[in-house]
Length: 237
Ligand SMILES: O=P(O)(O)O[C@H]1O[C@H](CO)[C@@H](O)[C@H]1O
Ligand SMILES: O=c1cc[nH]c(=O)[nH]1
Image (cartoon, rainbow, N blue to C red):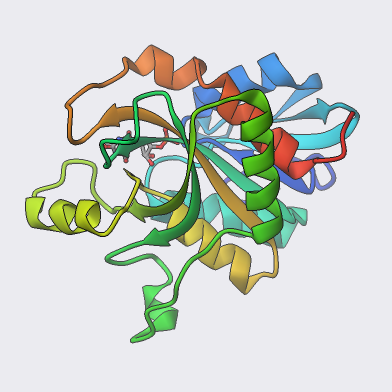
């Protein structure tokens, strides 16, 4: 047990999917995993372990924002031995070519700051996805026929943004979407020699104003979860 995760040692798999929303963790575990056991309920941040096509998998809510994700990912890596961490999140679309419900595979993440700023200091570290996971996720998405975009995203510290000039620059520089966790996930994975990827579903659009209801964000993002599982276990039959 850790301060934020109540699972016993050995109850969390080396492969962990990380939705921000704990109810998405519950839905994904119940929908896609076999032999599911709830392994965390501390602070209501639900976590589950089961198996997918015979492979052990955990799905742990990570909360909203990089400080929250950092707590769970640090404990998952240091105390439970997690090695492959795949965020399954929602994001806002930032290009006209990106549509609501499309999937984005985040190759890199741009930020203004992360919880790691304190140790990286003046270094503008470039958080990037694990190539093997990214390649496998792109192949899985292509095989499913899911409309998918691969490229840079923006990990923001704020949901209610008051810097339209920043968004203009993001759009101008080809950023596909905005969310709030991937950059710190990628930095922590690099630091601890783990593999990480963010697979995101576009839940709303900054240019068009379209938005999905919260019920859809909780439980209708099946393609994203299957792509994440197939990326983690590309050989699974
Ligand atoms: O749907 P999740 O995974 O929580 O991700 C996105 O949704 C939350 C904001 O509504 C932030 O956590 C953002 O990154
Ligand atoms: O962080 C997020 C997530 C979804 N949509 C946004 O605009 N921002």
